Figure 1 (cartoon, rainbow, N blue to C red):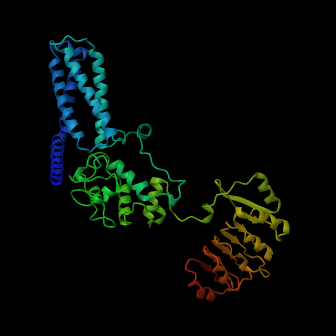
Figure 2: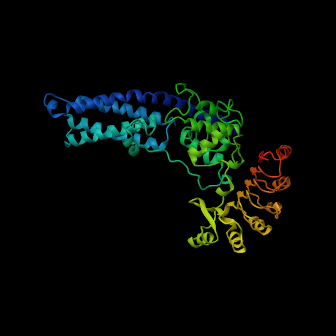
Figure 3: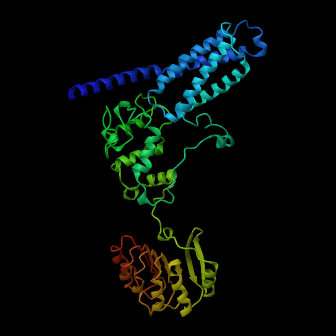
Length: 466
């Protein structure tokens, strides 16, 4: 019994495939014969012009041929629609506007025929024929060449108003950990370009791309996606073929863009993971640029201050800073972090208290040419968002630089023309984000810098002006 069911199922599938192939063969004649009714309709409409109509004894024969050729065209179009090459939502308008044109052609013939007694509204019918013909023709062209085919070379002022750009997903406010490559990039791309032909109802070549299971299972020709292997991944091989190749995908509509192909290529080479977050992927500069351009996903490494979001300060807060000789500027309008510079020579307790109060808002701090004490460095150590510290030409003879070790996000430390010695390397070892240390005109020699540099692969010690 089970064998009989399997045999029946296979027979049914074979019959469906044979019917699909036959209907596809005849359906593909639709773009060829569609010009025949167009020609007859244009001729019929010309014969109905006032100056010509009086000279014609009978125009019904032209309308009759328009009607018959439109019937044939609609039939072939319906066969082509069963191929699954077209997205249903786009196909619907073209299909039903074509059927409406068929009805209007029939009415045009009936009103002019001596065999029927039908109300006469020829002029209205002619207007509707012209409008419907333009509409159905435009939709047909959009199905074959893409939605913006008619307007893509129009003047710029016209193009802006007529072209419907494909809406882009915007991940500006989404963390990289919350973006999943397959769900957010790859699957939506397949839905736009592939799933109309490869879904759970229409499986061209036996391929269902609506689920990861169907995608990796593949179809009659083999696996659609093979992890880390472009040559064996049939989906990739079909989308990069010449459009003249009968195996090129998609066979109708807009082909995949260079960026879309590169995205699929990168996903396959990265292992074609289904549940992998973007933060876990290896990103080349090209892919980083592509993601930024297409999805507003900025994957470039950012300085710490660009990642911090704080409650905005009030105008009174800024006045307090200025009152204590602390000039300030915001690094960006949308970010409350500050670049602060002390304008005096000696920090008193009140100024140190103000620095402590606004410690989390200070990301760049300039205390150059200032006599510093340990309590000042203790205050600086509370600046959790500090990324640049300028202490050049300051008196550091009475301070312990080791007090700066809590500054885990410090990237630039300027100590030139100070009393620091080689102990600065012990301090630098405690600062994981440190990128540059300026040490010229200090007790640290060029030879000492060279001997220590190998221990700091990510930090540049800049000296040489002893």
